[in-house]
Image 1 (cartoon, rainbow, N blue to C red):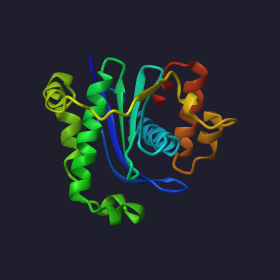
Image 2 (cartoon, one colour):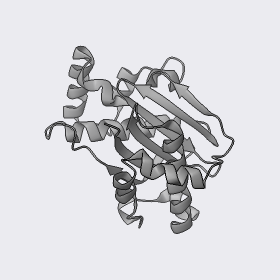
Image 3 (cartoon, one colour):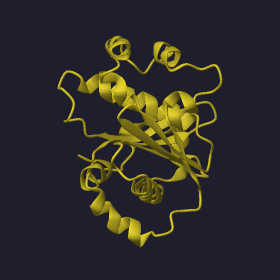
Length: 200
């Protein structure tokens, strides 16, 4: 079944990305896995935004999941994590729509120093629910027939977007945003290569 798992809005700062708003739909994961899955989706979203050029789009495959990212010219960024069946064009159109709406409601002067809890943008979970069905989003795609001319780059693994010499295992072990439980879960999943396909 086609699925959207998370939508994150970030600001791509000079040295790191800043969280602005996020929403998750993780009911398809086991109850005890959800917090670790959410931490990894957040970690991957931030990592991919930091390694995506300004005014660029890309989609990154990792196992059974795809991380779609768009960093606008003003450094506002959106990351949508879906399964492989969710159409890429629809995912990127949805990201564009949400970022446009976010930018119209939250002044850009707040983005670089924002605290997620203080940002008033309650629509994100509703978008995640409403557009689970890509046919619902198809109408939106037809309305905005011309997604901007930016080429969407498709990568087969998250390692493809990392900087030369970087390894995902090293980033995970150094991350302050992941709990010890999530790091242990990641290592176990990598060894069994079954649960960890959600990392992108």
